[in-house]
Image (cartoon, rainbow, N blue to C red):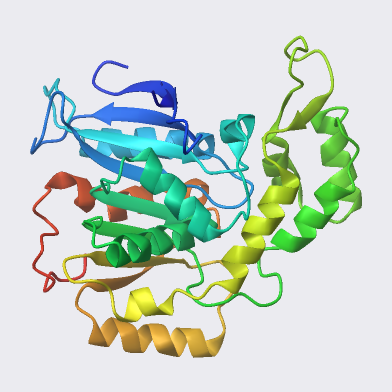
Length: 329
């Protein structure tokens, strides 16, 4: 039985835990679309994978907005189920033990087990989740299994990552110095401000604090909703793995769309050159820029991101096995 949460009548949310093998928590959003392909008891599946130190919960508001944007009026039977997955060592999935090594390969296999070996029609991954999505495609291809029809990689550097572009390593090191349990969110915000973190970052990290097990809600100390050591290992895997091969030679019948955040830290020039060359040479790979957005794309420009992704849900035949499909407008 899966473990998760669902979103209201035409759009409802439930929570589920996955099978004994994957131990993943996810939330499920059900919504109808104008063109109902598989409806009722057999809706099509889409998955969103969060980034480092995030959770599926971080994507709830965006998921609702996406559902409203593509939902057809007067349709009651859900034609899509959108899963907001808590990856290993993150969110409620930390309530179950995951054996190492904690890598993007292990995360991709977690997703495969969660979905029972059947790919989602649409797969969306942000930052670290973007590389997990590409690794999932690679793994399924090597196994000779079906692939997602469309995969969206959101502000995720395809090659190896040097330095600390989003201060992820620095943030993890800071979290390792904190007392456990953390006294309060206000205490955390003040502590991180003293360390030089912007309030936005401190507040975002604070959303990952939850009540201690057994404690009265809102009455006492807090603990992390993620496993810091496991997250550090996952980030090292994300930074050390190169996924250019999947972008430059994607499997036939699969489309990959890479979305850059306009206001994010610039990528190295050699990556920019490689992306431009890729955009000209591959008809089943799209390169997009999300305007007025930093790294947290679902919060910085949710309406722009909804507009980009909505076409993937309008019609299941929009991205068929014909790999000659053109880029979105």
